[in-house]
Length: 302
Ligand code: NAD
Image 1 (cartoon, rainbow, N blue to C red):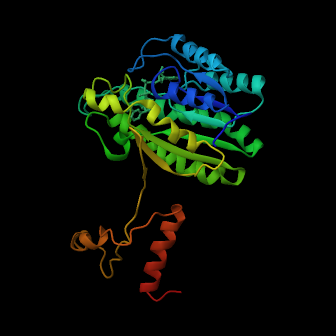
Image 2: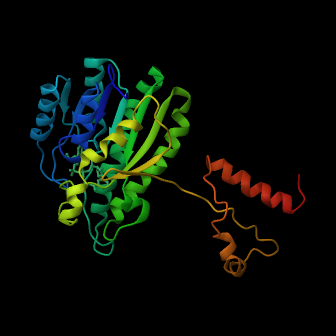
Image 3: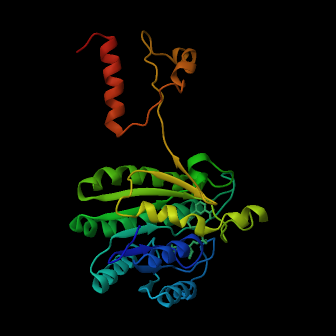
């Protein structure tokens, strides 16, 4: 049985949608939960703590413990205050779920760089702010579970979401590095790529899809990703009760011998992109070593 008794979790953007579902799921299994929410609209406008207070009331009604913190995740000072208050009240932070998000969709041709920055600021820098604030605490505890929230938009692409897709793909990059840096202190970092019926998607999806894509079908995957036996450096895609791992593979590749020209690259394209025996590399240097070894062997260098 996966339980979170005596553990403390922070869920950002937890007033509605997926964040609310994650907060309730964590509390139902014993975690004390900080329900963070700025209470903005999908496009980042307004501000309210009503929804977050409602989630805290739901948690308290089930006998759990929770409090609201209205930190804007883009504001490092407000995030630090949230972490400080959590430590003062409960003395530890075991789980951080970076979930807060906004959308400002437009084709790249029509998008202002201001709107590009705003979206990157909430998703990428907001997540980095929260991770950075809990990092020393998790290192000191020698325990931490962090989830970043990505999206198929970033992993596979979606028309009109260059800002959002770029920010969401960056989650994988942040995860990959934090995984390597956190490993020795048992800090495990994973990424959730959900697809859910929330106010963010209600205008975009047909009713029959919305019916099966409830956030509650995704939260069990999130709970596993923040559990004691969680994996690390995993992208879990989830929706409607379907769970899949999204991975980045590299082909075996092709060493171009002789003149390394664009024409040679074109001529060998089918070998360069051949997926036979493609592999998932463990870290950046694995790639460097792979290339240097292949080239050195071909040149007879030991
Ligand atoms: P939602 O709009 O229902 O909820 C987002 C929450 O984030 C809101 O409560 C909002 O107030 C909060 N928030 C926004 N900016 C904030 C800030 N600066 N500081 C603190 N809180 C802030 O969205 P959702 O559909 O539940 O999405 C949750 C996460 O999942 C987001 O990161 C979203 O990008 C991601 N996601 C959702 C889907 C989907 O299908 N719904 C798909 C892929 C990824």
